[in-house]
Length: 224
Image (tube, rainbow, N blue to C red; front, side, top):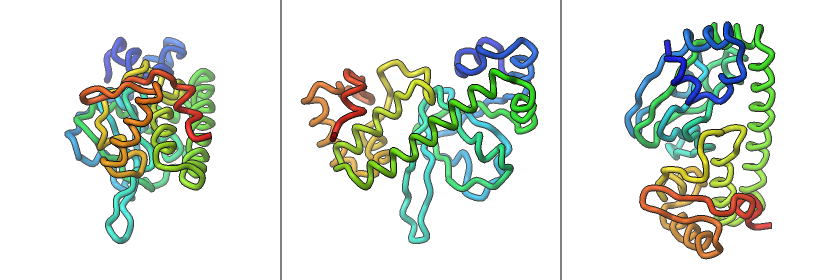
């Protein structure tokens, strides 16, 4: 069971719950630590937990039949994922890997389903979450078809600051250039060049081990 104050700190959605719902939620959550490079879940695993990132950074992706790893999205601290798979009760379709030392909160499926059946506030949150997730994946398809590497990287950074999916971030994130490149589908060298371009335009400030967004709207529109 997770302490009440810790749950409020890591899960924005929990603050909207009634007292009974909140207590049910925290009793159904355990925490686990994963070291950098560790698999949180593999493709084909039975997905029994709805998962939140307490600290660190996770990548959701897959490995092709030829062994090429592809990252689809990154989930920073404050993000929760896997609701669709839990609702459908199906095996995982993607790998989840800790890109750095990462702390996770895991809600068991029975608790998730109880909240889904009994909490209006929780259901409102899920609708917002699923709608935003759909918009994200449609946008990813658009990026890869229409935008160059710098624009794709800019848009992927902007999504990491989405206030619905990742409400805890502020305007700074601890992330390396290698991690940004991985999440954007480009090499570290291309990521470095793209970040210099974005920094030169006053959109971001690149720092040691992280970056600060100076113009989120500009990042979101970069390449138009």
